[in-house]
View (tube, one colour):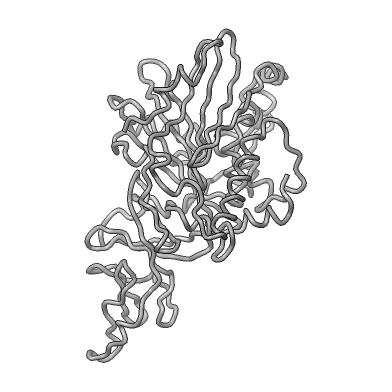
Length: 422
């Protein structure tokens, strides 16, 4: 349970807020690289941490990220002409390069030096892993670019996607950190209550292991004569990495993979959910066909979207819940793993009042998450750096999902599986 003041501290992300200042110390996904497919192509609107921005890929193929409004008369740069290594405002022709410098001001006399005194606000970008990353923080604290295994995996071995979620980032992030909900929210059942008894016999033992980048946490269940070990990583501020080494399609076609999410606040009440998966076997790429099948399983296949990365099943239509299906074979009656997540996360309201919660033993990872984020706000306010800004702290980590003998020490048995290979 958080106090109202602590809840406010963690959920507000706009400029100048404690948590907003924390987010601005990390590289964050601002767009999919595929949203900017070609040099001099159409600009893209970006809203990030309460700021309205415009992304564009210039003539050299580099991505610029600038204010959504021209510094002259605040005209919208979205309608700008992307040409010759700059974005030109259509109102009076002022042109800015990706660094924010004004490179042309045709509305002023040719000998005017005014353009040397005007800039548009801009932020550094970096591309890797299928994402355009942005850094919105102080220049003297800018860290090295992200170095997750995801960004080093070959393009043939990874797949990324994106969804709009209508709630504060924290309840979405906490949903990802909560491993105990899986056997309920995502359960398929036979129409009776056997799933309750089965789960009671395999309640996970949740352990949290602090790290320099956040923490590793495990959910371990006894299943017959084996223990099922699921090892997740939480990487500050909002990255979750989990394993799926058995592969989405067991058998000869299985592709062992790592997948996860990066939750990026659009503002206090909405969130971009960036999804990723990458194959862990260098000899087995992820084909588009396999990736799309997994996306449909998650509820985010190509036909599951309406527009602008919003899902067709949403709060307004109750996620198309099927009460008969719920009675017969699906615990929620909602189809799609992420759709089920959205139903409970968005259904809480845009910003949850955590002072009304009652947390239990399987909430250890959520409690640890909140403590780390509160500590990060304190560190930044004191002039320091939050955990995990240095990519060296996390570059070798890998999540895991394995069955091993019940009497085995999982740390020793799975040491190799926990280490990145790309």
